[in-house]
Length: 381
Image (cartoon, rainbow, N blue to C red; front, side, top):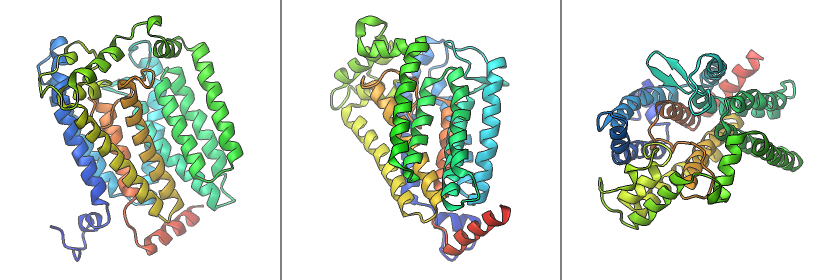
């Protein structure tokens, strides 16, 4: 146990972070390994890999994820913004390089190879985008000599246009919705909020008209006879087979024919083997983390911290909702992972970065430190 009197970096960190939020994230990571042990082996065997290939790799990625999340949570607000700017710039550069040098997977150029490892740069851009947008909105509201709101409006198209060109409609939609949420929380006029909603509808209609893969997904969602709905139908069947209490660990059969049982549809595999009760408990855990994050954001007196924390936890919760809604056929398929549950190295590392940002932003800081933060900003200006 760390004493409150201990004046060390770790002691200061331990007594200023929210330990309930930390506990929720730790439970979620452990649950992810347990559920992946159910969904991963059948996919690995179909691909001719060792039975626990995906589980072992998830553990390997979890170690650097923790090595990212914990050190990032130690950062001061000034260093946190600088890191976000660096991650955003490098991530956007890698997205552009992926067009030329990245492999084409399912008709999209979303990955870039770094040695034997594949990296999806857009995953890392997301948390950095939220922090930078929150900084722009907060500075625009606090200082009239800084064109913060203009920068916030500029960063959105600069981010989503490359995503659309990849194409990655799911990430584009996620980033845009979170930006609109920040716009709303920043207190801007309802007229602009309604205008953004209208622009979003126009964007969806344009995507339906001009992007064949988006049109196919929407049509399959609305009309089963318009295309292949095997994955969604199979996922729904897993809920029916599992019932309330599930068939037991390792006893599921649907996962053996579900192509993305370890990624997009791991929630459905969990339903068959562990039951709807466990799925509801998992949903409650996500809700607890989101509500805890929003509570901490609301209590924060610093506008930048409040906006950035709200955006990060909103993105986290929205991504979880989209994945689970796809699994129960309430949304068209998006190819979006369930945070800390689905297999995926880029997703796990980017989520760790985002949660590291969140923990740092929601730490309890003395008023003197916050005033020093403001004075440093003025001096840099």
